[in-house]
Length: 138
Image 1 (cartoon, one colour):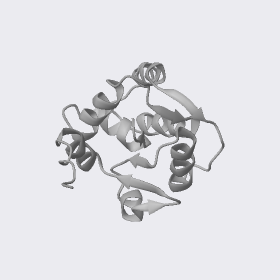
Image 2: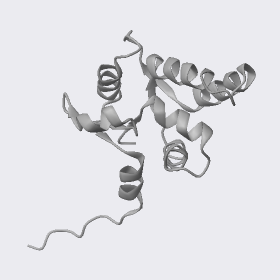
Image 3: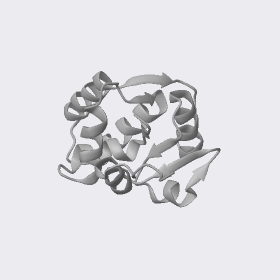
């Protein structure tokens, strides 16, 4: 897996079946390795799900249990709630990837921070379904 998933991807996938984030999460979870995440991401996902009126406490607990069973926590540093860029860059570096999958407009507008690229779920899905480029002609 060449990306880590930002909290908004998990939340959007949880509430919008058939959406790009939901298809991206299914693809990420379908690989041979567990997607890597951080305690900060899991805390943000839980908080964001609790803020949605359609998710009762027991539904949030069940969804978080499912997600935790499908991921590997590799980064446990503390970040402030609002430090999305810093937290996602730290996670990407801990996971040894150079991309963060997100649809958060503020992160996408940053494009690249500390050598880490922020890419949308639509763009990433397009990459995953496109054939590789032909080899160079020598």
